[in-house]
Length: 322
Image (tube, rainbow, N blue to C red; front, top):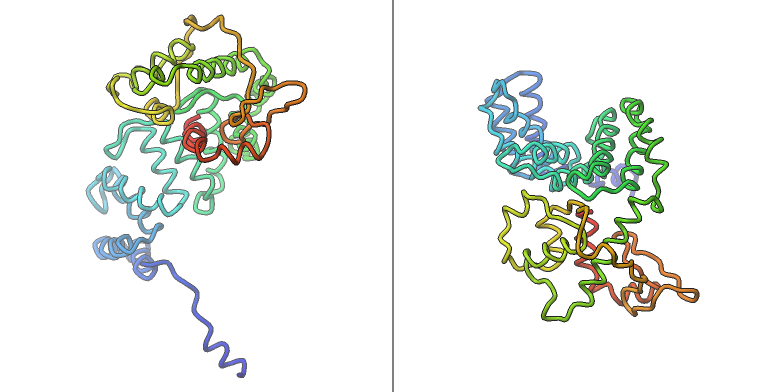
């Protein structure tokens, strides 16, 4: 077979569904300024599932001037959600901002805003380069202040270092990096946070089966005993009799807790760490390594794999919320 025949049989590059309609809509919007006809092509492209069209058309509905269509935050949000579900980074940023500001028919939810900001930086190709650093800075600040998550100096430091590489925000990051670099896991504040969490885990583990917390209210009481309070906004909107396990409780609380000055178990010593599967205690002959996502200790890779089915729901919830 000669070269020309081989070329003839070559398949054309795959286009996204709705690409032709989207291209036509772009031309009508930006070259001909024929918004009415452009709207019809955008809607066809969106219906076909074209993520860039869904984002671009969504922008029409948050334009306060209303030059192309009547502003409609809810419709914009639905279009951003569809685009974000296809990993379109800039749409994920737009959705994060809606959760952050309570727009599009959504209640303010900083934990979901953080989730979508973190998803967005995994898909940076559609985000302007000068904005990537600003998103890193936003994520770092949320970890530093405990907005939508528990405070975590180490994670804040990691994200600030990413932001430092961007010249547009580096001047704001320098002094923060100098301060955060002095705070390490052995610092009193972090050590106290680790101790409380260990005491809480040990306390729940030792409770008789019929006394283990099974409702939102029961988990609130346990956390209070161990030095954690639930933010009022979450406590008020959730019935105390709502059934939930620990991962579900974390989600209901938005992954963020208050730190109490005095509490019932504050004088309890931190228990020795144990392997999450075989329960061997850490000691001279046992070295525990931590799960990279949630810091659950294990004495070996074998124990970690053996425990995965039971551990996965908690690991996922902690990783997403903390």
